[in-house]
Image 1 (tube, chains in turn yellow, green):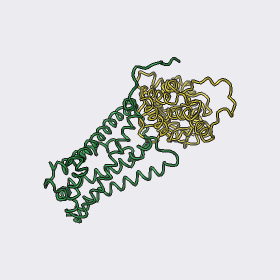
Image 2: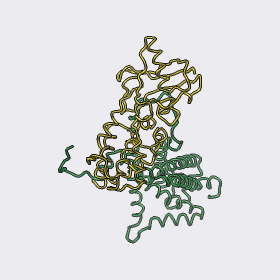
Image 3: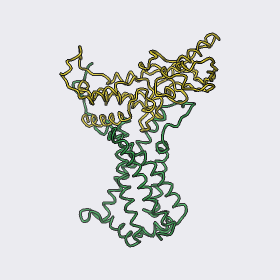
Image 4: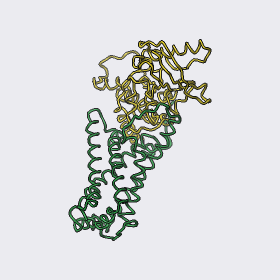
Amino acid sequence: MKLTLRVWRQRNPDSPGAMATYEVDGISQDMSFLEMLDTLNEELILGGDEPVAFDHDCREGICGACSLVINGDAHGPERTTTCQLHMRSFQDGDTIDVEPWRAAAFPVVKDLVVDRSAFDRVIQSGGYITAPTGAAPEAHATAVPKPVADTAFEHAECIGCGACVAACPNGSAMLFTAAKVVHLNSLPQGAPERESRVLEMVGQMDAEGFGGCTNTGACATACPKGIPLFSIAKMNREFVRAARKRG
Amino acid sequence: MALDTRTDRRPSFAGVLWRSTVGKKTAMAVSGIVMLLYLVAHMLGNLKIFFGALDFNGYAAWLRTIGEPFLHHEWFLWIVRVVLVVAVVTHAVAAYQLSRRDTAARPTAYSHRRRRASYATRTMRWGGVILGLFIVWHILDLTTLTVNPRAESGHPYENAVASFSTWYSATLYLVAMLALGLHIRHGFWSAAQTLGANRPGLDRPLKGLANGLAALLTLGFIAVPVSVLTGVVS
C-alpha cells in the first residue's frame, strides 16, 4: 500500500504546530496503524529527520496509552484502539489525517503526544475505595447480584485512553468520570464513599477545564471499550442524590 | 488520607449544583421541563381559536380569573409569568456559561472535521437564541400589543388574526416554531439523560416521546398562523 499521511507536528508545548505531509510506501494490510507509523519513523530517522512522537505501550488494546485522531475519528474508523486498528481498514492511495487528542485539559507535549494526567487527578480525587481489602475475601460474605456485578465490570473496562474527550465536541470527560463512578458506586465496596466520590470527581473534572456534556453521544460511539452513554445518566443521578444528601 | 472532623458550613444543595457542570445541566433540564409544560398548555389554549372569536376571547378573559376569589384578578397569570421568567433566565444563563466553557475546552479545532451530532443537537445553541429573540417579539406582538397592527386590548382573537395576516409576523412565527420543534427534539431526551431518568430499556421510548412532543407542539402552534394565512380563521 502507498499512503499519504498528514501528521500534526509540534516541537514542544509552547511552539505552534502544523500538519506535515509524508508519503509512505510498502505498507502491508496486516500492519497495525502504529506499525505503519513505525515504518514512517524509520524512514524519517534514516533521512536525518525527527521521528513523529506518539504514545503507545502494550499494543494489545488494553492499556489505553495509544491515542490519535485518525481522519477525524478517535482511534480511527474501527471501534478499537489505534494499536488494534489495521491497515486493511484503509485503501491503497488514501490520504490519512493524523492529529492528537484536542482538549484544553490535554495539552500537546510533542507531535501526537498529549498530557493526560488530568485523568489521573480525576481518579485521585475519588476513583478508589478506602476499605483495606487485603486478600481475596470469602465469596459469599457479601453477596453481589449478577446484574450488579455485570454493570460494575462493564464500567470497569474503561482504560482511560481519553477517546471520549477527543471525540466530544465540548472536550468533556463525562464518560470517563461516569465509568469510574458507576463502577465503584454499584458495588458494596464503593458504598462508604458513594456521595463524596461523585462530588469530588465531578469537581475535579470541572477544575481540569473539561467541557460540559450536551448529550451528543459522540463519546460512547468513540469508546473502544463500549462504555454506554447511560453511564452518564447514572452519574447525573448519583450527583444530584449526593448533592442533596450533603447540602 | 486525613478527613476534616468538622466543616464550617455545609454547602447548600443549590450551591453545589450551580457550581458544577452537571448541576447546571440539571438546572437547565428542570427549567426546560417547566417551559415545556407551559408550552403544552399554551398550545392547547391557542387551538380554541378554531371555535371562533367569542370562545377564544372568553377563554382569554377566563385565564385572568383563575384562582379567584383566593387570588386577585390576573394574579394567577402573573405568577405563571414570574415562574416563566425565572425558568427562561436560569436556562439561558446556564446555557451561556456552559457554552463558554465548552468552547474553551477545545481551543484547537481538528483540521479533519466530522459531523458527530444530529441537526437538532448541533442547532441547540443558536436555536435557543432564536427562540429567546422570538419570545421578545411574541410578547411585544400579542401581550403588550406594542407592535401589533390592530392592538385592541381584550380582543386577542382579532389581534392574532391581524398579526398573522402580515407576512413578516407569520414568517417569524413559522421559523420560530420549527426552531422550537428541533430544540425540543434534542432537549427533552437530553433533559431525561441529565436528570438520570434514561436507562437501556427507556432510551427508544424517550426519544420517541421527544419526537412526538416536538411534532405535536410545532404542528399545534403552526396551525394558527397557517389557518389565518389560508383564510380558515379570519
